Length: 371
Image (cartoon, rainbow, N blue to C red; front, side, top):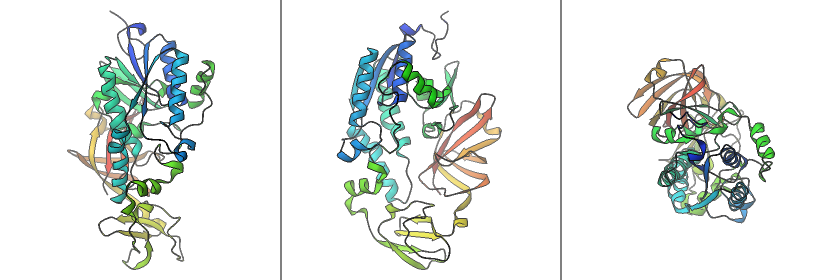
């Protein structure tokens, strides 16, 4: 019987076809090089997701024109087959339109999750299957552990880079096909490997902005696609008194302090956004504290129901900490009771579930914050 290779498949590396999602950054380029060095049969695929502008080409983003060229140079150096898939229309429908609709509904969206669940882990997943690949490899900083053809996801060991929050919506079928070789590495180690392999992207800065949002100015994106979305409305305090006027709810997010432009004896924060009445509700910082969350559209990826009998933790924003919680699941919705106070929880963000075992913090799934 053939022993398992380094990605958990019972084949020799030379007989194992892997598709590597190559964004043009150091992480995905290093993964492609690692797979090639280990002797795998590698095809690199780069996605063209949006049409570049002068603003986006200068911004630190992924999937822009320069990144596609960088990915091609790496593929040429590694002497691997490289494909470019043009998914601009799918990206517009699955990610950009959803992003805009979410803001117009008074939510704070996470387009990176939508991108993973549409073009990357649905369309690219299918493309890899069509190529009869054995696995789809990405440069995400998460750990995956496969036993008996079932894969479980864990936080990456580099907690400053851990991307498990963005992958909670992955399906079990996708997870069993995906591999994340960087999950046990620190970012500095990845760059070191890239330098050792003489990759031209070894010292390339990380992408920082949402790829289609130039310089972090998301309002400009909404103005471009939905120019009639900036409707003035009332800003009210918690007593229901009108204390100001806003230029469009899309300019505000829960927990925001700057830009409210209302003077008060104490600093004011955005407490709530009511899309139906086009109103912004403001209050003091203590009014941001929440201990209960309602979730919709749950996605559970753990294969062990007993995980929910253990001590549970949740994460309510990508940069947030793990918070102890009790979770009551009802079909595709859930009520989450936080055992620690948290501020600035926003509808439209994700609440991701974790439990801890001897292998680390395991991702159980999660849902979208409704209220």
